[in-house]
Amino acid sequence: MLMAHPKVFEAVVIGIPHPKWQERPLACIVTVPGQTVTEDELKEFLKDKIASWWIPDKIALMDQLPKTSVGKFSKRALRELYAEGKIK
Image (cartoon, rainbow, N blue to C red; front, side, top):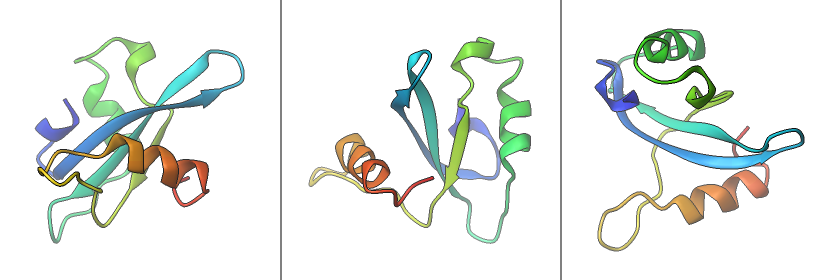
């Protein structure tokens, strides 16, 4: 759903540890070149499209998303970046 936003070029959602719910979504976003988007704007966009508990608590804006050798998003690499503190 995030990639349906006109300012989002690429998006992937991963689960990150949460003290109460065990895991919550973190969205990693690359914007369309020349565009900017806020976390609130993206959350508002999702509000009537998905269940409220699916809306990511955090949205990380990135320059690029890591990909596998076949061009798929590498969620493993994103989880490692988060664990290393490189994604907040």
